[in-house]
Image (cartoon, rainbow, N blue to C red; front, top):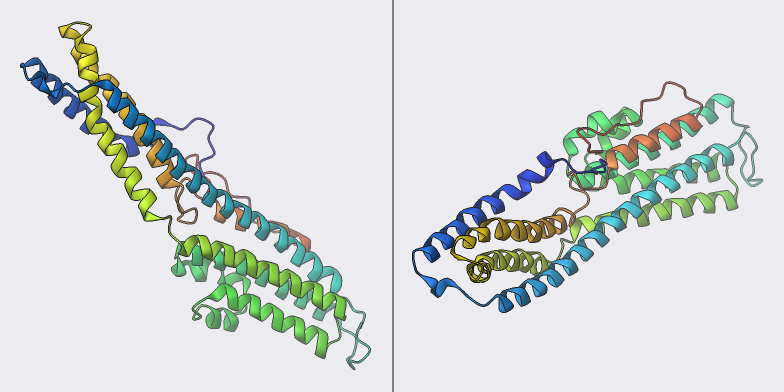
Length: 321
């Protein structure tokens, strides 16, 4: 996610140079041919302007849909943050030395056992957040570095072989809750149900992210937006040159900068929508899932009482990943 208030030119130029170069050469060619006497290139400005209005509405509609996808993705990850914190609080405050299930015959849990169970449940939640991020970005090669440290070695080796590791991590959380309720008596019915509801919400958030990731932006909107902008860019110099020619023969060269400027504006509108279509691709305009996962890690480990915490991630070249 680009975080600088003003976008640097080095960010804009890679998306703009092809259109600027093409439109400059194309408009120059139109002017040279027109100056040579081929005035048949001149077309009325009104149809070109009407087309520009239609293209602007169409591109605006596409951009609105693209932004909705980005904002939904950001809201889903906001939910991941909230329910991760909620899960940590439940794990720490519900699971105590008091045996709440009278039908379970089990000795009181020791502080060492409770500490281990707290850490296991909280660390697996951190692993789930990172595993979900890697799954959305299609980066399984980073598992050993960013997920495995939060899991037991055997569990990590088992989970990474699954088709959907995040789903199986939540499944393992539910299995641990069953043990805590039925075998150890460390959860009563209300607490067990409450924590299962938290897992259900985490599943819903994961499913929402997968829905966006696995459903591409409708190609008919994305493709024809590109086509219409290019068509408008081709007709623009033909409509402008006659208007400038009426001001004087030397004014036709103004067609070049104005055609480039207007084409660049429309191209930028189209590119903005294109770069917002898929918010989980690890690009500069995407949801900063890496930074969000680091925030979750810091919050949850601090709840465990740890002090040796990693720093929050800072933007790299004005981009927070």
